[in-house]
Length: 214
Image 1 (cartoon, rainbow, N blue to C red):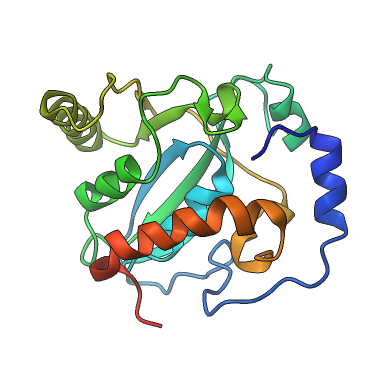
Image 2 (cartoon, rainbow, N blue to C red):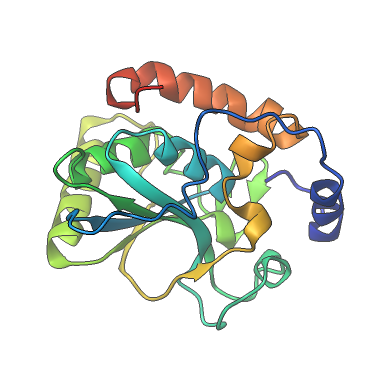
């Protein structure tokens, strides 16, 4: 999010009343039918409003939940995380159908939708909660993430070294309800219109073959 105080941001959110809706349902409350084999990916790439919006649109992604993880405070609030003392990052927990989309494809989206070379910063969003991080859930995810990171560094795709942390999954605490499905419910909000929307338009152009059918 932009560099404004948490209390001001909360006040802005409280008074949003004319949000536009899209065809994307609230995937934080989606109930996954029994019998579908699923897997989980956990990524941090800056503001979780952006991360959530990207991954919600991918065919094969069943559920996306914004939250906090990787820190030492149990069940933190947004205000606590904003104070930069909890150790948590803003994360998206992504439940997906590996028969439709692979972890490799999710990694591609992860690295192409943020700057993995800036320490604790994405644009005007500054702080450890905005760090670039992959929390792997098993050895296979760890190996794939490390291999992809090394290949990107070697390719020279970025002018600076990739600083994305690759760490074992530690914890995840869902964010407050008003953070869930944020972009879809608040497209008239300033941050959504001027920060997320341009990124989303670029994302939808690059990954048009991987998007859900509307």
